[in-house]
Length: 315
Ligand code: R2B
Ligand code: URA
Image (cartoon, rainbow, N blue to C red; front, side, top):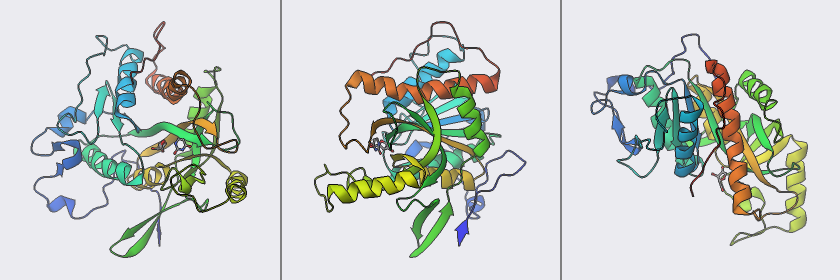
């Protein structure tokens, strides 16, 4: 049976777990937060945008950038990590924007999302938009292009997320919010410095063989087979490849969150496997999804861009 995305009118997050109500306390272990130790409604009740991305440093820099973009008091350089008690994930806030790292791959983002979604529920947040901003390998597109995902697909190009639960395979739909994707594409028109497009994103369980790379420690296929597979992916509408989008789309969609995935392509996988662009170029590429999301959030909040603001990333 496939579980599908549900959007409801209340704007609240849907927790689909009957056991949670009978728990006296909920410890969000990997975030180092809990319902008894923290006043979650006071800390997070006004959050409207959640941005998630792989690297803790990138998500800190994004929160600092949003702090400036939103014209908040102070320089935002000393933002505290809300999850400082754990080194699993990092979390920062800038006004109504929460910025959280999820590290690499489905198991890691899945743990973070279970706890984040419960956090939004316990905090009684309403009308939250969640966006994954990240990197990816492009397919038949120029490096540096930003891809807004319309559908997250698995490595057989199917819009599904499969998980083994008590020995059964549970299949969940990976639908993302189509209107949100269109709104993001409209915002990209105001940033002419780079190309943004909408396409399918393929999510894999591995960076090397799982993405058809010839340069891992193991490789069980020929370069012809690799190219044949990647071309089939392209013909199925895939424009980029990464490692979290199906789980992200399934979990967020089922819990009633408006969700989008926006990733920059670091290379064109039809041209090669190794990421060869210089560091400065890769850093600039990684800023592109952040710039787009900042423009979107400002627009949603009715704010103009602050004069002379630029992103600054530390390694
Ligand atoms: C994109 O980049 C990472 C692998 O380098 C992975 O987390 C992803 O989805
Ligand atoms: N992230 C991926 O998952 N794949 C790439 O090729 C580049 C970044």
